[in-house]
Length: 225
Image 1 (cartoon, rainbow, N blue to C red):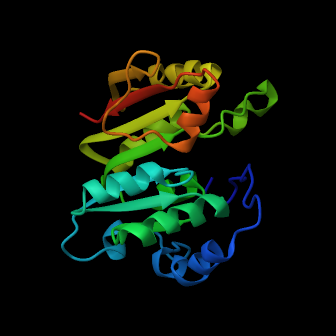
Image 2 (cartoon, one colour):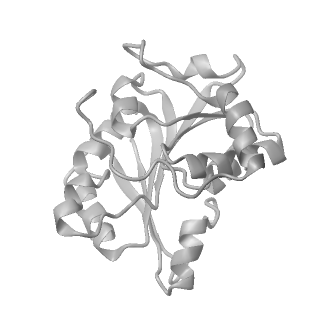
Image 3 (cartoon, helix red, strand yellow):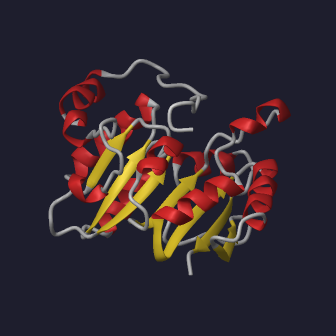
């Protein structure tokens, strides 16, 4: 699994403008990290000694949630995984504008990263609006499975939280089945944006796009007891 994971999806969309290109060249190397030489990766090495808690976001898109969470919790370290360079460039722009210093980034596949991550080292994991791979023949590409949830659970501390969200009804049902078929985390809360949404997660560009197309998002909050 560590080296046999196949990446699905784009790594680069439209060409970056000059400012974002400069950020990728100058700022990204300061935030980027690699775990290739690690057998077990401890996120403690990425941050100052004063930071003791760590949060992971898988597929951070344009970075709206990652930046919001990092700005609201400067005492915590935030790790973002996403291979899509246009999203990385957008995140870098937010980081630069707001002078945020508690975010680190990697293009690594989430499963490879989680396999190497030190057990019980995370306080939260966010997995919001990943590609739903709607065609049935592509369902095997969906990240959220019962095995994925179990893997996240091994990396979460006691009382650690996993957040899942999608605006695709089929993926919502898929996620619900995945949650039901694992016993590592307890489902404690759900939100449907037709009626309400979690106040502690900002509206990202993906959720806004869904709302503009009259699609509602569903959020799941799970906790490790």
